Image: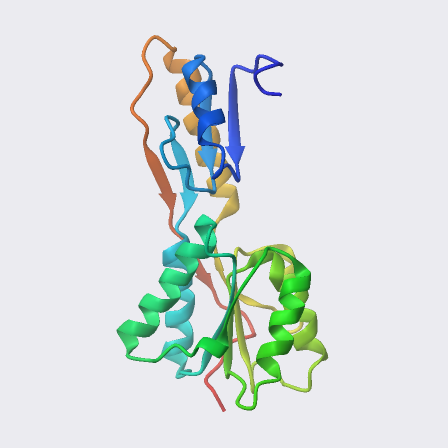
Length: 227
């Protein structure tokens, strides 16, 4: 559609499986920036969240509070964010010398239904976790209601931390601690890259470059030391 409408430039988000289509646009002389997904072999510059750093920062926050039985609800391993979030979680746990238990890690699609299923699985364990990291953003919309309906008190009996901050997390009770991927900065950076391409002219294709936006920890009411 972008080709048919002859756009001068386009920002493509969630573009991980579209390397060939991205490169066709670039080769036709259009300004292109990819955002939020790794695009192997892309000729276009990119702006990405620091997914691995975000999961590591969230896990380190829980570890510093004293949690060791930490569960994770993650995205699918074949997607950039799912793969890198998992790597950050494992790295933080390994550095702290804390084992990762298979029954505490649920990896699946970006859907609320998966979040509901994963939260029920984890809370129904004979020895449930004392802390939960949700890096699967869409799954959080299913997981949080399950937690809210459970008899567990947050954060006294279960600490919860999510990634990719948004207003909904501030309205939950208690407000959700997050590691913010700074979506507004991602979008601004992508727009600035695109404008730089457009104003630089198209006489020569610039070398691809990647910008990574560092996350920030936003402490609210859902994390505390284990009882």
